[in-house]
Length: 385
Image 1 (cartoon, rainbow, N blue to C red):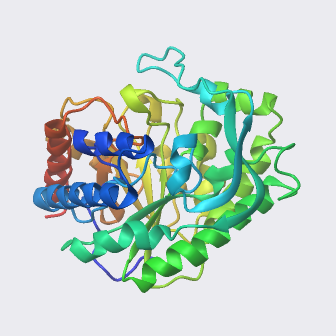
Image 2: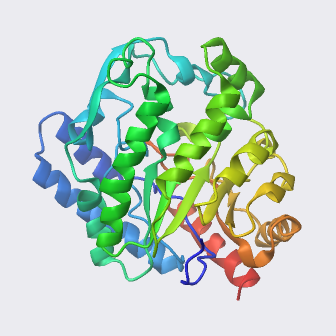
């Protein structure tokens, strides 16, 4: 249930653009020209700058920009070069078709080729924890931030893409058994440790709900690959909801978007109506939904009528896919439109996704990124003075 702390009206999804010097340091680390201690020092500098940026514009809650990560998918790396610093073991990169990678689109809707590798990561052994994600990422943010902080991590449901009927069955007989193992890892090794460090805001990222289920073409592709989409939708929501059950003193949020790849690429088109009645009422243990609403691809606000009565909704109304700055009056008007379905006192505003879900980042300048964050705060202060 919602916590007693003030509602963060000006929120941020997670990732920020990587400074050029950080991207170069990470290349040097992968090539063996920089050791881990030196890379850590460069990351520390970047995170301190990210903290200063977010606090400087006046956000109500901040992250470390996910600047220590190759990708927002931090638990199991999407690419082999991310394996060296992954917190989990038990997966291998094995031959496979592109699968969901083949569904990405260019900004104009044309098919995008974002995956050329002949292998993909799949779970093949029981999960093992090999790095303390919270200690390595959140502890530094908490120690240096003056503002409220939050930690972001992929939801269990997202990990369904790492289960393969041939490669994974010996370790986990069903994808749901694997997702439950991920959920237990998040409960024990992430949420509990976050609380122990004084963290009071956790965000699970679950773009799968919108990426796989709301877009008719994507849904048809998954069906053709052997997925029972109706059953998986329910199972995913129930597993994600159970992940955050029973914790107190922490705000639990779920973020759902339609894909956020370098260059402004996206993965799905379609409103939340396709999933809202099944998913939103099952997510009773979440205090907050962060939902993408920056383009017509996201549909209208009517699906918000299915949001549980205690749940806050953060409207992702400013795009991170291009630099043009949204008009304050227009964003305020959209929030008021959404308040037909969720009362204004349970609404907040944010960008629709991160600015750099992967190292390459979206096509914005740091100045445009800062302007977007300032605009989030301006809208929030006008609506909730």
